[in-house]
Image 1 (cartoon, rainbow, N blue to C red):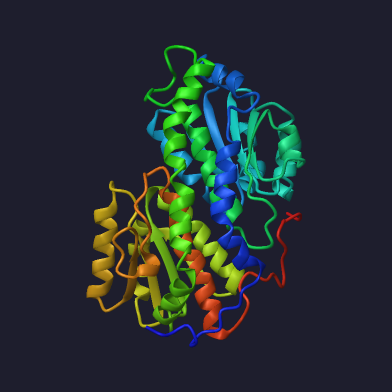
Image 2: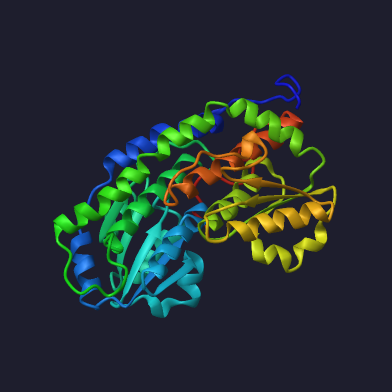
Length: 369
């Protein structure tokens, strides 16, 4: 493997934000509670006044909703996952009193979120997840979960992982822990909600130490990945289930932070076309994911290698230490899965001695539709 002097790793605010993720996760976990307005929303769910849950956001905020979408659907909820822009213009009939909206926006004031609040006109109840306590989303939502990521300089990293944590916390309330069907047969009490969140909280408490352990060797990870990715022009990130959060966000932040093309998609979708792109210039990063489909993802990795393609597996048993993440509960896995992709962004920048995470055409908050 190349040594640390082979590549020029430029430390900037983006790198410092990445390294600040353990603190941000600890702060967010300490601040999570039963938010105002949530018990009343749960009573409406239990009374079957709310018939569907719409999950919405843009960019990494949208992708962060994948694990919650899978969790709620597995527990019998009727859930709809839509980018906020699509919800506004093509699905406006979902703005009604039978809909619960979970809206995620790190800034709480992106163009689509502001329009969502206006177009909804308080017809559908909204649970907001945001990092900004004085934003339109925080001030106008019926219930709010605030993350504690702190100021973020550019590309989403600590705001993304803390949003994942808050959404998993919210999921424990909405599914009421042990209850596996919807609607529930009795009303939830504050004690039920407290008990239901305790198990999840104990799992989420493992996130920050695991993230810190991985980031302790961040420079070595960057160097290893920079060498591994030499000559790669086409990057694919693929996975299934909850890993769709990391593959979607990963493709986004690689483009945003390095100006290199990358595409995130499901492992199954990769076989339906992109498989033909296998070559020395194509690199496929495969997320092993949870136990349910890990065998399928591993098989794709082996098939690509058999065809002479370039691929690596990301997970607890990865061959490269930079892609090997600590073993954690399934609820925490999406938080860990994004870390090697963040290292990829630094590795690609280090190959050319450029600065990762510096905006040249856009900005941190998108205010124009």
